[in-house]
Image: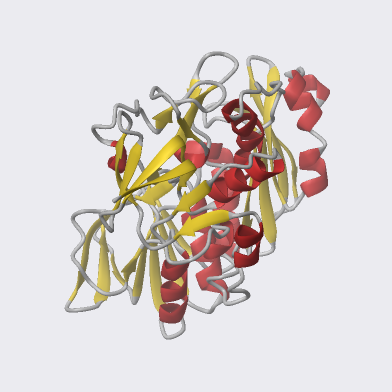
Amino acid sequence: MTTSAGIVIVGGGLAASRTAEQLRRAEFAGPITLISDEEHLPYDRPPLSKEVLRAETDDVVLKPAEFYDEKDITVRLGSGATSLDTAAQTVTLASGEVVGYDELVIATGLVPKRIPSFPDLEGIRVLRTFDESLALRKHAGSARHAVVIGAGFIGCEVAASLRTLGVEVVLVEPQPTPLASVLGEQIGELVARLHRAEGVDVRCGVGVTEVTGSDHVERVVLSDGTELDADIVVVGVGSRPSTDWLEGSGVAVDNGVVCDVAGRTSAAGVWAIGDVASWRDAAGHQVRVEHWSNVAEQARVIVPAMLGVEATSTVVVPYFWSDQYDVKIQCLGEPEADDVVHVVADDGRKFLAYYERDGAVVGVVGGGMPGKVMKARGKIAAGAPIADVL
């Protein structure tokens, strides 16, 4: 049976919830249907590796059920999209149901990468969903030894949370330092220092060759031959855009759903927002941004465009943060690993660094220095000379 729904939003996270909310704020009065493969209402993901894992809160729902009822937004949970027919303007769900749309918003986010060579053992986990966070939290309650593979932001946050829970943690990273590919080795070493000060065994420049156990994981073998005891193995080796369900749809995909400057895809009536979307920037480059704050900026553009009003473009300075122990690591701008890094403050735990490219300040990263980080926004937006901030 085919049913009709005006605007259909596929996804169950911040991007989906924010799009639905903005549509009603813009006084769109037609049907809105939100489709999610999860059993939970759309929720906030950043706390999963922090407050939820540490059992400080389970309340991460973005909007209560009453909000969707009051705004007349239909929420279909527990059956995600499996295919898209842009000619017929229908989405097929895992349940077999076919849902029609007038406009479709792709907000499916990311799926965590796994390591295919690992055996199917209890105790090997990834962290992307609320249920995965609860399962890891429960397991951590009786665990003694954890190995976290991958020292990106999620890996570092999970390592910090598990250490706070009293678990002995080894953080394994093939690159020279944590976060080396994102923030460069100089800042990565400051992050490694923070973790070592908290008792984490940080092993960089080494990978994992084998994970062993009977029914449950017991041991991790590193590429240098080291064998580590492990009750828990958390795989944090990155994520990829959730676009498999778009195969054969005609929607262009290249490191995410390819969009124009307002979120339009290559298919008429189909849009994309959030982590899954690669938007064209003002310089004509396709850019996919995985930061929480990016969703709000995109929603303010995509919703008016869907309703026939092109939003005025503004200069947006990307921003993201990561909470590790008592230090909030914040980043403004678009730093790259090969930029010139100027560390202007470092007390052995907290730090502040500016990133220089072609003589201009392009980013700032601070650990535990929120005020000084945020003051740099104007300089970064203006492409000011590095001398203006040093």
